[in-house]
Every structure is written in C-alpha cells, then in structure tokens.
Length: 463
Image 1: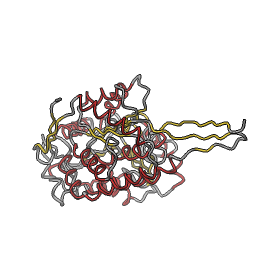
Image 2: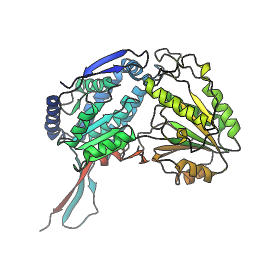
Image 3: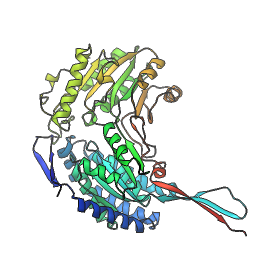
Image 4: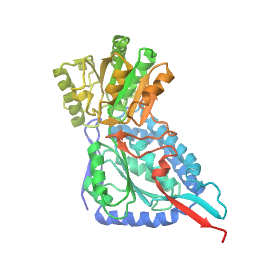
C-alpha cells in the first residue's frame, strides 16, 4: 500500500475521515478497466449516454442535503450556502448533457459532386480529471460530464481535503447503472498523479488548481502529445464606473469578494473605483462587509466560514500586514469578529484602501477574504490596471452603458468579461483563462472540441 491520508476539517481541527492512497496495482487496474470500458462506451449512442448521465444527476441531487453538509465539514463553507453547489452541479451537468447532441454531431461540408465529406468528433480515450477542494463538485463536473458524454472514460483524482466528492459522484454513476469502468476515482498523492500523467493510458488531463500545480501537470505530460486543460489561478479585477448603480455594485462585489471566504479562482480581489464615486463606494463596501457573521459553518447564522486551514489564513494575514506596513489602510477591525483568532482558519474579512500595485495584495493571488480598492480617474487608467497582472480569468465592469462595457471589455485580457455581475459561471459560455490563468476550455459547446479529436471522412462515391 502507499499509505493513507487524513482529512482535517477546518470546523474544529479534528480528523474528519481517513482514506488509503491507491497502490500501484490498483492504479494499473483502473487504467486497464478504463481503457476496456471506453472501447465499448465510445460506440454507445449519445442519446443513451445522456440517459445514464441524467440518471446519475438525479441520484446525486437526491442526496443533496447530506452532500451539502459534507462540503461544510470538509472545507468549511457555511451550511446555509453549501446546497448551492448541489444546484450548480445539476445546472452545469444538465446543460452539458443537453448540448452534447448538437456539439458532437458530424460537421457537414459543402456538397461536391461524386464525394461525401464530413468531419466526425472522436473521443480521446481516457480523461484524467484532477479537481480541487474549494468547489469540489463544480470544478469536477465541468470536465467529468462532458468527457463521458463525448464517449471517453474518466478517472477522477480529487483533493485529499474533499475525497467524499469523488466517492459521492461514483455512487451516483453506479446508481445510474453506468457501465463499470467508464467512471472511476482514485485517491492519489501528487507524485502518483504525476506518474499517471506521464505514463501510457491517459489521453487528456483536465486540471483545476494553482499555477505551480499547472506547471507540474504540463511537465509530467511533456513529450506524450496529449491534451491538457488548465484552469488555474486568478487575481480578478472589477471596475466601478461613475455611472454605475452603486447599491447594486456594492452588494454584488462584496459577495464576489468574500463568498466561500474568498477561496475562489474567480473571486474579486482588486477593485478600481472611479474618483467620482470612490468614497461613497468604499463607505458602502466596508459597511456591508462588517455585517458578515464569522463562525461555525454548521451554524445557519454563519455567513462567513473558516478558511480551509490555518496556514492558508496565515498567508492572507501576512499579505494584509505587508500591505499595511507599505501604507495601505485597513478599514475592518478584526476585533469586531469574535471568531477571528490567530493560528486558526477563522479569519475576518478585510477591506484595504490606499493600495497600489507595488503590494503583493494587489499582484499575487490572495485566495482569501480580502479586497483592495484603488481610485482611478478614467476608463483608460482602469484598463491599464486591470491588465497589469499575470492572471486573466475574469473581470467585471459596473456601469449602465452596455456599449462602453463591450468596448472596454474588448481591451481587457481575460477569459470572461462581466457587466454588472461577477464570480459566477454560465454553462452556456466558455470557461477559459489567458496568461497564467490557464488554457483550454470547459463548459459550453466549445468544451466538446477539447474532449474529442476531429476525424475527416473523404468518400469518393462516383467512380
């Protein structure tokens, strides 16, 4: 055996569960079963695949209350919000199931006398999905359902912080009667996962995680000529224009910054407010932030749970301290949050002003409940600052001028550009990043192009 791991809950620091890592024989067996299953599964009609996947979603949703509570215990999200992940899983899965028939249909070519020509989508083989803890089901479903719908087999490696996510998905597929081997999970350490990527048997890797993790995936896959989808970090900006609906912007940007304790790749981490509304925006933003209730995520009164672990909270505390030492002003008194304690995952939200891009809190991914707010005097200045980042996942603009929003959005280097909303996904739209935020695409019909390969049929029918 390769040993075991423990999942430490951030709720109270206790061991929530323990699981063994897969051994080498188990890994080899899973790869063999996936390849054998996929050889048959690729011939199953898309409509029949949809039946299996829809039944799996039904089975998953039926256990939604228990799954939501497990999310709270494993990674600390308040129980009042955890059911939203079950709903989001269902929304994305059902959209991708419905989109498959058209997305996977043969591509016809203009008629040519004496020939039949078309392009067919062929499955890649075995897809290896590596999913993180922060949104354990939403990150996994983005690749698992479309990969299976496209005719691939899937092996899921989930974070050791949220191993139940893999197990509950397996239960749902088993309950739906999915043929054995089409979906499997393995509990692996990082070294085992890298060896799997580098060995024969994996045909595509869908990775969601950190930038350093993405680099390790690319290194492991080097020379194998397989596809790699990388959904990595973010330092997502927002621009609040002078013509914005200020109350709407404040309400949604506070939520976009602090939901899930800021532990989201598309959380709003830096805000640029126009000089004409800056002070009013800051006052409203800070006032709304002070209304959060930090505490036990199993308590339904809690609106802000702990971070995933004490070390993560300490990292955020360090960014705040460094910014303040460099001249930033912290607007939130942690003393107003009784649960905030040094050396624990419980961290009060923070709002920083008088920040600039020399500070790590405005340059490096924070992944915690902190928002830095800068004053800008023009659209041009806002665009320059938004683009002054190695990341490019999402960005948002808050304005009543749609034409201006589109024009500015064309100049901002991100995968998704929002107007008057943030920190969300629409499964009908491609989820992708630029720069260090990754490459490839999840969701939308476009995602199917990354989970299949084109095969051209060139048939001469007249001799």
